[in-house]
Picture 1 (tube, one colour):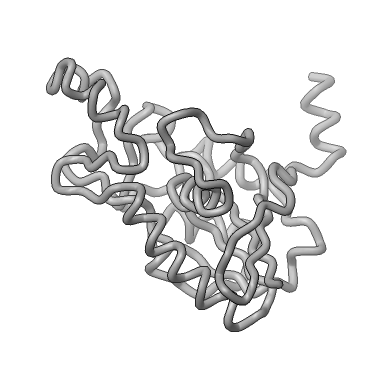
Picture 2 (cartoon, one colour; picture 1 turned 180 degrees about the vertical axis):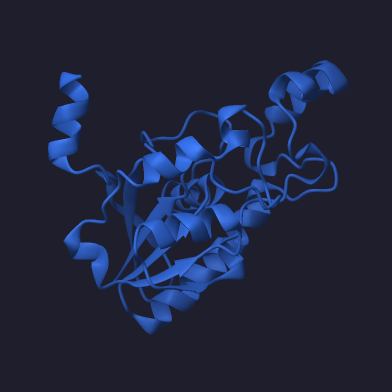
Length: 204
């Protein structure tokens, strides 16, 4: 069995503006940089073999965390096509009821000129298969879409309903892969915020 730990990049301006953010190469925002600087990778993950998405926001996050990484194209964010950079309200205004109907497609939703979550899941599955053959504990700094795809592989989640488990974003999500590339959830929401800082935040 092989362990795989996933971290989502820190926030960008588009995240803060609630814009769909696919493969546009948006950097971390000033607040995003401050937030990632509060994160610490727990010691048990430091010696993992780490990969990173090609996009700047993931590479910046990995660098701030002090991780030595190898770039992996398969864990780039979902391609939102012509929807990239749009807010939900902008898409609702453009497509009307058609947008609401398309959202109901879940894992088979395909943005104009983009890719579906099912296609993202397939490329993540292929990457996970390569990781399982190597057998080394592995980590990746990537994106929400990659973590959601891995959750879908582990649970069969169709992305129409809310995820079967809560997913927090200041956290590591740990999965286990067998030699066939099958995925199992081991531990979700392992905090990246040190306990002492957590206590400070709670008391402020």
